[in-house]
Length: 538
Image 1 (cartoon, one colour):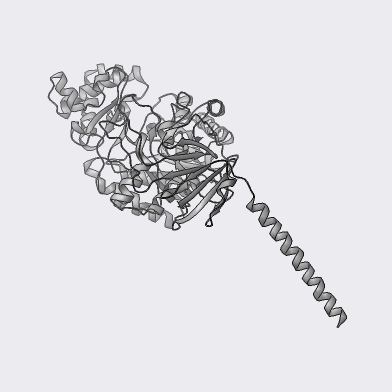
Image 2 (cartoon, helix red, strand yellow):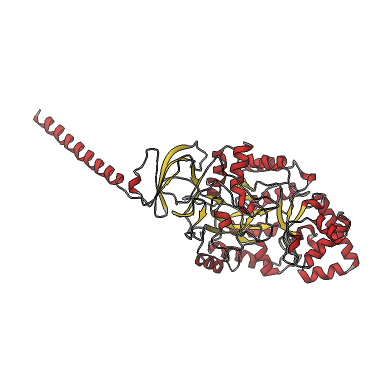
């Protein structure tokens, strides 16, 4: 009996010590200090789970607590009262034109819409030399985090110029080596722009070979399809085949159906995605929420006419027979592709050689010139524009029903295809300022195409998972402290196609790597962004 009493006494003592240690630990946790406490907000964590009320505590560049129980405000260096606001992971833009990054390192047009990480180098246009560019970007002082893809068009042009032919065996090996080098230096995958020169001149075997080089390092493949108009279905099939043969995850980037003749075709392309996934091919989609695209005026010119570069194109248009063929090709593209069959659908964005054209249409230019505003007559204007250096154009040729159908698909992520810009720089596509708030305001709140939880997931955890970034894209303890705070009742884009240079409303705070970059709706001077490198990024 005495032995039993002693054992019980020892057990009680052990329990007391354990409880004391637990209490001490709890006290230590309770007295923790935070650099930033986001208090009283409604958390949407990025996973698609239902929202809930919670405080979010940040220390350094990490989230250290997401607590449904209020945390003591007096233990935080700063408190943001998020009552009535949504607290979510920072948005990840999976298709961003970051070419102006070194001159616009604050990336204000991106961060003001809640973007905390953007993936550059899309459409085959990744930087080169790769490592050198990433080093220069890191030294620039960035307002957001950035990552990059290796660009097929960039690499092909370095090796082959604008040659309209297949690569030699040696040229292909050189391009494969360059892709592998970029992957080793931190690229997240390979991008192609198969509608653009020189990518248009490549055959599928070339792209598969290069995609395999990216796949060997765990990269992804993002594809500006070879055609998004009449050849859309074939373009989707080609991208799926590349994913299958190269054994690489695929993103059909800025997916859409171009031109009135293809409106409704998204029902077929989405079925193709579902079928491919059913066969084990990892295919996803990204999309911007607008009924217009933006790219150069050269997209209205048959690609064969651009082979060899500007001087070769100039020689061809001086040859009457070749010019006739080029003009017929332009008319065909105006009628069936980006032109939408109407010159009023083709709007000038940035025109270095004639600023008064910015915001005007191809129809307007024909009238200004006293030319019959018909496609047959406007072909000469397209040639003239390209000879003068080209122009960035907005093409109003996408159907709203396709936009909504694609957006609803469970494999679709939100991405801007926007170029970094500043107020006063031409007449850009409004997506550069408003992609993410437009989804939240128009397609969630007004049109109810998505729930708020679904939309946030498409902007956060889905792109993070596509990039294998396990510590971003979710609001949880231990994650990198990229956070956006917005008002679900007011968030909205403000830019229009006529007046695009307008920042959105309803996003008062954006936090990048634990530092407030947008504070009460205004940019701060903080530049805490990093260049992320595949395999080394968090």
